[in-house]
Image (cartoon, rainbow, N blue to C red):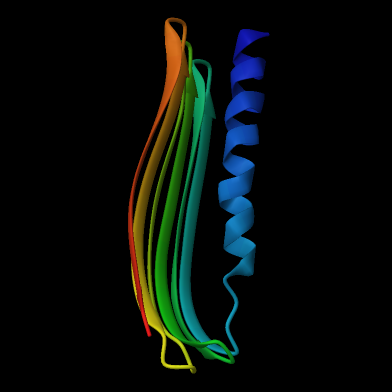
Length: 121
């Protein structure tokens, strides 16, 4: 039952991150997506990589996004890295980077977030 609880907990933490991927659509775009999933008697893991470029009504942009999830007998963890750059039609431009890690185990839980963003115009 504890393993099921961990899987549900990690999936619940991952949904907001993965849902953000659905908004990455462009009028003229290129993209790449890769995902893997694995499960065994001692745990489960999933990973997703998404990248793309686009030219749409909100300007030109490019992004990279990766999410990794793991659940095992000693806990659960999620790691996410995102980067983006854009050039808006109104003269604005910007770039950003964000790295997030969330983990929980029998001795506690924790999270870490590092981000940097700049916008001009």
